[in-house]
Length: 110
Image: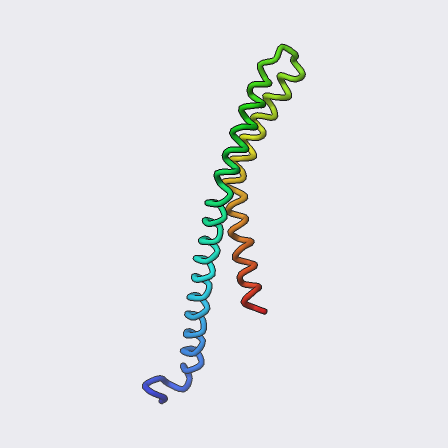
């Protein structure tokens, strides 16, 4: 018996400590990745919102023309711009977090 731990269970105890430390490191990476993405959105978010708003308004304004082809194109483009904005602030951000986590983990492996 080593310090109250049976010799047979000692490798498992060491492995448990290793897994606990790995989990702590993984949690820290997740927090850093989330902070990086939040900071990136703080910087780029107003620009993305402004560009989306002005483009959608311009296309919606263009949809009031009497020429059906231009009206249909502008309506489709305005809806597409809004859908793209929705995907950028939801799906793309989630994928960006996963990619940032992967890059941080790869940097630690080097």
